[in-house]
Length: 226
Image (cartoon, rainbow, N blue to C red; front, side, top):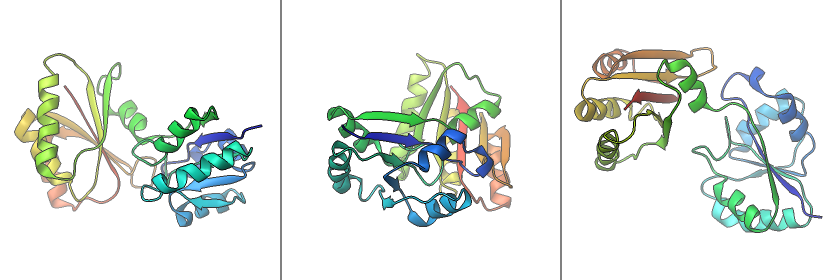
């Protein structure tokens, strides 16, 4: 009998957001795939969970996927978590899930927190249709082209755009948005569910001024409406 691959969501900040089902699943795995054993080790310790952790990140996913699939074929129960939130959402795991499906291995999700849905729900922007872009390209030329293509798409579709951004590229991205879309309203969510959670709803220029005065820190989710 083949094993099962569990895709397990964990808190994005506030540990109280973990689900009972996630805890029970983590307690009963043969192997737990994690991005960083130090980060996941703290989570497991908080809930008194002992698990056999195996590092599985963007650098090792390609080389380790085949061996993990072999373990699943042998009947091992495997779980995958990211450092925070839902695995595969701008995090490793897609290749493993795809290979598991190709090998007729059952894949089950344990749903829970994800920053993009949290941000959308508090943004005040329309929620009926949205486009999630993960992280925009690091190189400015590619980032600008992505935003220009979005503007072209706005002629045919109306939706809320959501993407993640690094604090190191926040200024440049806000400037790119202003250059391409004009001084539109943008929602910037920072450190969601954490002590210093912040949700700002301002024009792109005002947000640029705000973060110029206070150097940006933390994890950012940006949203605007096409």
